Image (cartoon, rainbow, N blue to C red; front, side):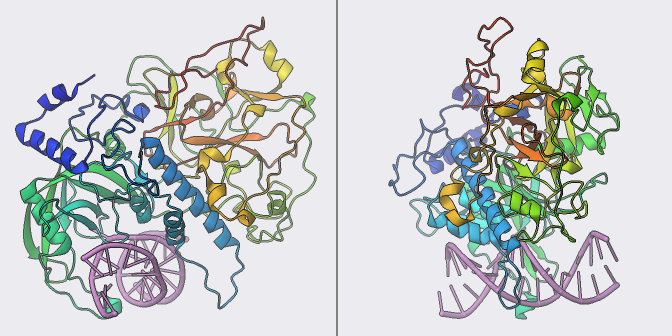
Length: 603
DNA sequence: GCACGGTCAGGTGT
DNA sequence: CACACCTGACCGTG
C-alpha cells in the first residue's frame, strides 16, 4: 500500500505541483489511495501507479462547504454515483418503453429525446450529484474507465455539465475574470489525432451551420478556447471524456440494438500547447494538444485494442470453452499461473428430467408482427400489459418473472419479446482472478439492461440437490433469485408515476417444492460468474419454452454500463446462516468480492 | 442493406 | 434576448 508521501515520490516535481493544485481546486482531501472500488477489473492489468489526483473518498472527505440539505451533494460516494447512473438508465428505459408503446397517432409527436425527458425529471427531483460549484480535477465517485451512452449522463454526475458543448470551463477562484477548462468531450467529430495519451482537440466556434445558413468563420480566442489556453499557463488538469463509435465486431450477430456511441471517462490531461491552423472549411481554428497525465489506469478499451493486434492472446488457454455450442466463441485466459479451467460439459440449454413433470405451454400470442402492440399481444398481457424489453433488446426493469414469447407464438424470432432465448451477444471470456478462481468478463462495452447469458445446468429438486454434496459452488437455488428492483435502479418506483409501474405477477404459492440448477457437470459461461456484494448484473426469472413457474430460466442482465474487461458479477443472494452441510451444521463461506459494500460473508 | 450526410428540434448557459 | 453548442433521431442518398 502506498502512503500519500510515497506516492508523490513517484512523480516529478512539476507533477507534484499539479497534484496539489488540483486537490486545492477540488476542495477536498485524499483519504485513501490504496483501495479500488472496482478492484476486479484491474486485478490482472499490470502494476498500478496511483500517482494521479483521485477523487477524495467520502464520507471522510465531505466538502468543507457542507452543502445545504436540499442538495444531493452532501456525501458523494462511488456507490452514490453508480446509483444515480442506474436510476437514469432505469428511468430512461421505462420512459422509452412508455414512448414506444404509444400508438403513433398522426399529429401527436412522439418524444424523440427520452434522454432529455429523463434528465429534466431527475433534475426536478434533485437526483443529480456533484451539482454544486463546478469541479476542477477528479470528480467525487467517478472513476477512470466509467462508461456512458448519453451526454446527459455526464451532466447528472457533474463530470461534464453542458449537453452539447464540448468544452466546460470554470471561473478561477480569486481571479474573477479568468476562466480555465474543467473538462472536454472528444467525440471524434473533429479531426483529432489519436495517439492514446495525446489528444489534439479542436477549438469551438466558427463552423458553418447549413441549417441556419451560417458560413464558416475564424474561431475566436474566447469561451472554451480561451479557457483551454488559460489551462496551459495555469497547469490545471482537464478531465477528458472520449466518445468511441461502436465498432460492431465482425462476429456480432446482433442486428437489433444500434446504440451509437460509448463515452468513456479517460482521466486527467494537461493542455501543453495550442496553435491555429486552417480547418476543414478553410477557416482558422484553434488546436490544443493535450497529454494524459501519467499513472492513471489504462483504459480497458485500449487493452482490448492492443490484445487484438497480437496474433495470440496473452494467457490464452482455451480457444472456445463452449466448443461451438454458443454462437460466439468464449475463450479462457489465465495470465497468473498454469491452471486450466475445470472440465464440464457445455450446454446452452437447461437440462430437465422427465421426473419433474414440467408444465408445458398451452398456447402463445397471435401477433403477426413483432408484438409491438402491447394491448393485443397476449404475452404482453401476461407481463402486466407491457413488453418487458425495449426495441433494442434491453430489459426495462427486473421483475419477479418475465414471459418471453415462445414456440407456440405466431410472432417471428425477431419479435421484441424474445431477448434472452437468442443466447449471448457479447464477446465473453473466462479468466483466472487473483482471489476468486475463475471469473467472467466481456471484451465489449455492455450497456445497462443488456442480456448477458443464461445460467444453465441440470434442473434438480431440492432433495436431489441435497444428495449431490460437495459442489455447492455450482448450484443456483431458484427460490433465491427474487429479482428485485433494487439492483436495476433503486428508487425507480418513487420517481415514476404509479400508473406506469409494473404490476407484480408473482405466483404467491412460494412454499412449494424448491428447485436448483446444478451446473457442476453441465453448464454454460454462467457457472463461472462470481458473486459480488455490489454486483453489475442482475438475475432475472424468465419463462418462454414451458409454463412451469417453479423452474424458470435464470437470465443474467447488465444492471449498469459495464466497461470491457470489468468482471461480471451478480448477487448470489444467500441469507447467512441458512446454508447447512449434510449433517445440518451451518456452513460459512467468506466473500472476497472486494467491494466497499462487502458484508464479508457469502453465506 | 448500410453507411453517411443533411436536417431538425431541443435544453442550458452565456 | 438571441445564439451557439463535438446531441441524437430521422430521413434521404449513394
